[in-house]
Amino acid sequence: MSAPRVDSVRTSAAHASTKPQRRTIPRETPVHCLRPLGEAYRPRFDPAALALLEKMDYMISLVEKAKSDPPVDSSPSDVPVTSDHIQSSAVRPWTAHADLQEIPSRCDISCRILEWPIFDEIQYNRKRDALFVGRVKASQQSHLRSQGIVEEHISSYVDQFLINVHTKNPVVDHTLLSQHVRDIAENGLGWDGPTSVTLMACALGIISQPFQRIPVTNVKTVEPDLSLADVYYTAARKRIGLLDTASLEYLQTTFLSGVYEMYTLRPLVAWHSFHAACSSMQLEIRTEINLTPLKTPSWNLTEELPMPPHETRDEDVPTIFPLEESWYYYLTDISQRAILDRILNSFYAEESDRHWLQTSPNDMARIALELDRQLVMTDTNLPPWLHYSQENIGDRELPYFIHRRLLQMQECLFKPFLFRVLHCHETQPQVISELAQRCVEACRTNILETAIQHRHHGSWFVARGAFRCAMAIVAAAKSGKLVMPNDWFACVETALTVIEFWGQEAADLQPLGQILRMVYDHTKEQLEQEQSRY
Image (cartoon, rainbow, N blue to C red; front, side, top):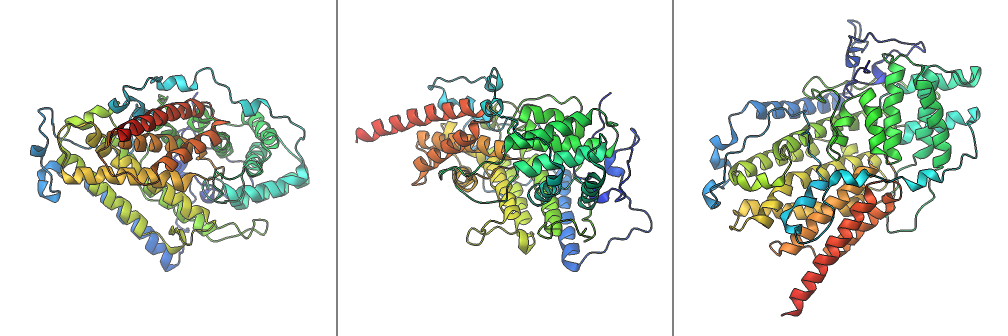
């Protein structure tokens, strides 16, 4: 029997009982309904918190309003572009997909660029699924388990988990987790749910490190003890089979297992863990790999956002753990995810990018500008402590991750316009060219801002993003139709370094790096030959 789904928007142990007792969830009851919000529960928040929640509700209402608005071509005056500018008989109206929470089944936002016609003259393997065939992660084979579980170290590992990992994935109750640590110190390790959750938290605490923006071009820093982390991970996995699949501890352990597997750049393994625990992260992996879900991977982002927990802090919880900041980051990530899903459904619902040439530029531009406006509004309404500033960013992790997501959304949003400019023989309207230029700028910034050594649950996405951004930059340079940044050569070299850095652990990254190197060298040689003629 399949495990029940956990809606990660709702799943939080902050909403679970804080009593250290086993809890069983009826199979017919959605997990996100299990919040102890009885009549007596009346959370109190400071005015700033209430203002932030109201702004987020307002942003989501804008998305809902856009769904119910008339078709975008009913008001062509909003954008000074008409279909008459495109001298093609294949132009057809564009209608954005209404379902904002359903990821297209063949999205594959990174590898679909391999099939762009501008690269047809370059010979490489265009079969995306072949990237994962017959490849074994070499680094895992070399792990030597020289140390076992030490119960005295569990408390410090859990502290590292709360500081480095839980801030971005608050799916366990931090006070209850601290109670589990005390129980293990008194009674030893068990084979129950609390022990399973605690051991998985230890594995993540060992493999994670404090956030530092050390470039990948620098000497590699000291790696975490991956072999020791794997000992705790394996011990937790052994206990999962003994848990009730409807219990909260089972769902939490399997979700954290998926997070650990993403930390170790194993997306295919993580897919199974996230399938057993939830749908939301499964959706994000589907944007990169063509995997068919066993159940419909849809989730409603338009419901009431989860409320942050009370500011209650257990004496065993590390004081540097940013509880309130973590929760507002979590809510912001939910809001950003809603907009990203709409971008994917509006522009990436079809498998081939060639359909962008057959649609009205007026419709495409108006949808893109509206989504860009929502992105700007989301960023503007952030509380001060989550605002990203290049001058004052330092080692502030949560603002960095919010900014990284924004860069990804901008790059995906403007990519269709880059494709049109590169592959249309007719002159494009000015707004199309401007959005294509913004795509080049977004790709450049994305590569340079994310080229750091910090390991996190999205490191695999960072490397894949560096690949597609570098490929887009090379395509733009190859076409000669856009203004290229002066440092675009160095930018592509940085992307190759990022892919090589993480490619030592991920099965698919090495062949992607080889393809990028081939395309880059071919384009550079071609441009040098053209320059020598003048």
